[in-house]
Amino acid sequence: MFAGSIGIGWIANGSPMIRHPIVIALRTEGWGVTVSAVLLTVGAMLLVRSWLRLGQRMGTWEGNSLKPIVAAIGAWSLPLLFAVPVYSRDVYAYIGQGRLMMEGQDPYDVGISALNNWFALGADPAWAEARTPYGPYFLWMAHAVVAITGAQPDVSVLLFRLLAAAGVLLCVVYVPKLAELHGINGARALWIAVANPLFLISFVASAHNDAIMVGFAVAGTYFAATKRPLLGILLVTLSIGIKPATVLLLPFIGLMWAGAGASWPRKFGIWAATASISFAILVVSGIPYGLGLGWAWAITDPTPGFTGYSPSGFLGQQIEFLGNALGLPGNAMADILRAVMKWGAVALVLVLMFRGDHSRVVRRMALAFAAIVLLSPIIQPWYILWFVPFLAVTGIRDDWQMRCLYVGVTFFVVFGAQDQLSVWSFVEVSVDLSSLAFAIALLFAFYLVFLDIHTRRLLVQGKLSRWVGQTDRRLLHRPPTIR
Figure: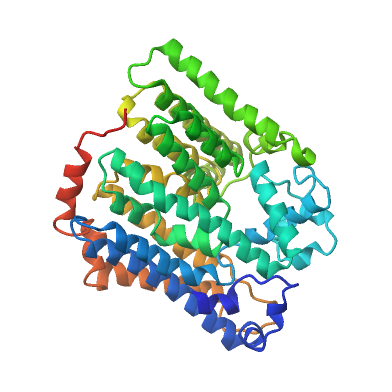
C-alpha cells in the first residue's frame, strides 16, 4: 500500500514531492500508475487477510493475547503513517481550513475557495464552497498545524496524521479497558475495533479527523462507566468539538452518571446537567477566533443527497425505479422512504434512551449510534467506525454478527480501493484503473471466501476457530462490572 500510494495516492500540486524522479515516473507513465493501482489494491486486500488470520491465530484469546494485537496495529500502521494519502483527500481540506483560520476568516461562513491558490493545496473541489462541519477544537488544531508548517502540504499531512494516530492510540488504550468492564475479552475487542483494515486505512492512511473524535469518545465513555462522569463529559465534549456527531453520546453518559435504579426525575435532572456542562464548554470554546456556535449547522442542517450503498439510498433508488415504471412519482416516494428511515433512527435512539437495563447502557448507546449511521441517507466508509468500537466492547458474537462485520469491512476496503485514484488526465493507460482495481479486489475476495484453506472456513462457517465461539459465549454471559 505504501509503494502503490506513491503513484496513485493524492499529492498536492504544490508539493515538491511531485518533482521527484521516481514520483514522476510512477505518476506520468501508464505502466507506473497501473503498477501502483495493482500494488495499492493487493496491499489493501492482503491487509484484510492478515487481519482475519490474526484473529484465527489467537485461538481462544486466553493468556497475554493483547500484546500481539497491539504489535500488529503498530506494524500495520507504521508504513501507512508515511504513505501518500489514499482512499480520501480530506486531509488537504484540513490544511485549507487551517489557512482560513490563519487569515482570520470563518470556516463556518466561507469555503476554501476564499483562499489564494487554494487548488494547489490538493483539496477536493467539493470543498471549494463548503462550510466546514467540524467543531472548534479541530479548527484550533488545523490552525496550529498550518502555523507550524506554513501550509507546506507534505509536512502538514504528516502532522494531521500524527493527530489522527493520537486518536488511534486512545482507542488502543481504552477499548480493552472498556471491554473488560463488560466481561468481554479486551484483546478480541481491540482486534475487532482497531486492528481491522478499514480502521487503519481510514484513520491512519487517510488521516480522517474522525480518529480523534472516536478516541475521545471511547475514553470519555470509559471514565463515565467507571463513576468519573465529569471527566467523561469533558472528554466526550472534546469529541463533539472535533466532529459534532458524538453529541448523541451525551444522554447515555448522563444515564451512567445517574446510576442504577435512578428515578425519572433524577435522570432528567442529570440529563439537563450533562447537556448544560457540555454545551457551556462548547459555547466558551467558540469565543476564541470568533467561531461561536457555527459548528451547530452540521447537526441542524445535514448534507443533502444520499449514497447509493447506504440502506436508505439503495432502497430509495429501487423504490424510485419501481415507482417510475408504474407511472407513479418515484422520486417523491424515494424521498418519503428516506425520511421515514431517518426519523425511524431518531425514534430508535429515544427508545434506547428510555428503555433498557442499566448494565447495558454502553450497548444501548452503540445501537443508537449504529441506527443513526446506518439509517441515514449518506454513509461514508469510515462512518461505521464511529460505532464499531462500542459494539466490540459490549460483545460481537462469532456468528452472523461477525460475518456482517467481515462483509462491511471488506466491502468498504474493496470500494475504497477503486473509488479515489489520483491519475492525471494526460496519462495514457491501456485499461480503466478503477475497473482494474475493482476486479482485483473482487478476485481476492473470491479467493478469501472459496479458495484460501484458512479464511474460507472463517467466512463461510463464521468461526474464528472451533474454540472461539464457546469462549465468546462464556464471556458474553459473564455479568458485567459496570454499574
